[in-house]
View (cartoon, one colour):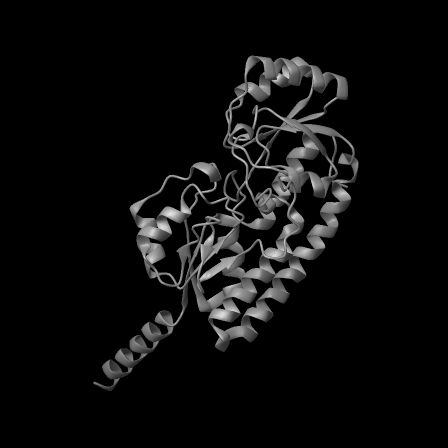
Length: 310
């Protein structure tokens, strides 16, 4: 009897401990990874996007609504990059801790952990017009592709978790320090790697490489798309080939979610080499963490440029 009573008490204690964990939803895999590292034993983390998808075209599932309805927090990229799926999901989930902001399309409420806070936002548009394609009013939101955004993302997650769960704030701070102690030496190593890329010209399929260009020194001179979200025309492609030859473009970035056909054709026409790059963790094999995702992208760029990590 005593053994049964002890087992029952232990089970209740474990259930109580599990119930006390913060339930967190992360919009993309790399944010889920960093949240798990910072949150440790005090959080459970569910993700939404798979990583292989286009962030602008995430397929919404009924399970997303139930995840958001039960969540204590959502960790997001922000800058309206999740606008195609997150506002609608938040609206249907009806979680008072997180709701869609009607003006910015971002998340509003105490449960929102927006990782863009404090990010040096690039490519802020001077004007907004539908004729310019799918522009982001707050600036280029793809900072998650920039390796040096990692520390800021981690700090924002730590601050958000500590705000929602002050009883474990010291643990979150400790986990943050441990994570940064691993990430910052990698950043120093990667900066040495990419030194040979500085000044090389490149094009990308979509206008999402600003932060990766800022980190590596690559100069992205144009996109395969005519405008953000608008497919290329024959006239645009002919003009692009001419510019690439004139400027001696060395690298064509093909984001993993886009078809290889046009980048391959451009490579044939210009002599540039194609680098396949992920825009989220888990887009490519063995890239389930922010560090692995970032490093794989840098290796792909270096390979296309005919360089080796130094």
